[in-house]
Image (cartoon, rainbow, N blue to C red):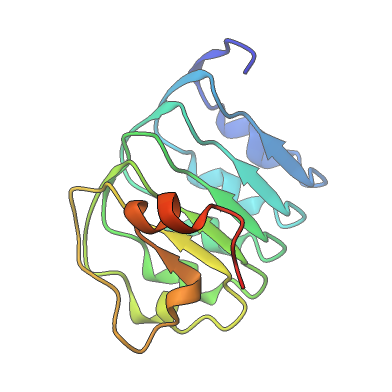
Length: 152
C-alpha cells in the first residue's frame, strides 16, 4: 500500500535473485510482464488489489520456486494457463475477483501440494470437479462460514 501507480516494468524480470515481490494495494495498471517468469528464485508474488488487466502470462510457470501467487482483486481476463499446473512448489493460488473464464486446467486440480486455490467472483469459471478436495477449494460463502484460516 504505497500509492504506486503506472505499469510493472519488464526489467523487474532481470532481478533474478529477488525472492519476494509484494506490490499489493496500489494502482498498478496494464499487463503482467511475461519477463517476470524469469524470477526463478521468487517464492512469493503478491500483486493483488491493483488494476492489472490482460491475461495471466503462461511464462509465470517458469518461477519454479514460487509457493504463493496472489493475483486476486484485479481485472485479469482470459483463461487460467495450463502451464501453472507444472509449478512444483505452488501452495497458494489466489485468482478470485477478476474477469477470468473457462475451464480450469486439470493439471491445477491435480497438484498435490496446492493447499488453496480461490477462483470465486470471476466471469465464467466452471466449477471444480467433485474429486477435488473440498478442504482446498473455497467459494466466497464458504469463506464467510468457515473463516479464511480454517484448513483442517
